[in-house]
Length: 409
Ligand SMILES: [Fe+2]
Image 1 (spheres, rainbow, N blue to C red):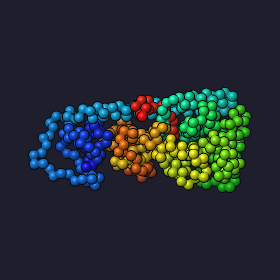
Image 2: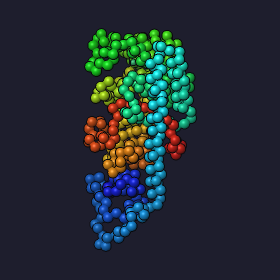
Image 3: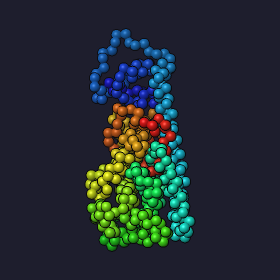
Image 4: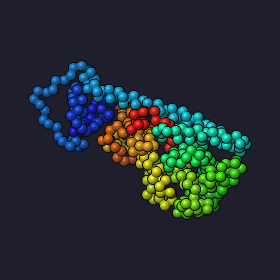
């Protein structure tokens, strides 16, 4: 039977307020709550309830929580502790992100005036990121809040660098290559500084002349990068990040293996970030749609092994996806463990829990609960939208998993 409890989430030991009763243990726990009413949902149940007994089960007179199965309650307490740990991890990660993005802004602004100093600062920043990415730890990719994830080009550069380095790590690149990848990714669009804003910021499709001008940013980037003294392999990324495997990319129309592997990585994450974060946010795809489009309709453009690996570490429902779970709950994927992308952490909409304390549910905890589909944020009811606050921009940063249990699984 599928039941709904009219209790606050914190006042019962179950994972959700609505669920299908799976075994006798759950039934015993449910009975121990001493509830007068449990709502039965026929359309989601496999069986009908038995007829009521003649002498009803005596009601517990004390507070329901006193009677609850102690084991189940201890489990719930652990879960609550884990939720607050997860929330702390996201906040810690956002704090780190704020520090990193301000360094990126500074060095980009001073790039031409103080090139040596700026490149050195970038180098230090990337090396630090590589160090924490490659240390033998379990890394989680978190979704950043819109309030701290601004809208300018620096965020795109950092986002691409973060995702590229993560993909490079999963592809087994050695640390020096991940560093080169990070530098190339951070500066991949540096040539755009020489392209007029009216072309860069145009939301309607570009005309022929504008497109030709836009495409010059790869070679302009190469020129700038040479002046700055970037490593040749990082410069390759800047020149080649719009090349495609089928040879129909630009500026040179290079094919397959002629494109550097590092540039092939950046091509994938750059396309993903551009789909998720359009100049006009209304045109953006959801993270799930972006991956689905790249995989189903653009596969010939990307290195297929790397694309599969990217999907494997972002999950089919990357952070930022609004999802419907198999138990009818609706939530937003907030972080993902790069090694276990099929079981992300999902922030759950539950009107009985205050928004600031929203439950973050780790899908590895319950094998019965899975993601059924992704939902476009604009299709959500107003109250669910306000509760989940879907991001207008998808900005990611990483952090090591502190939850030892999960890291060892
Ligand atoms: Fe570009």
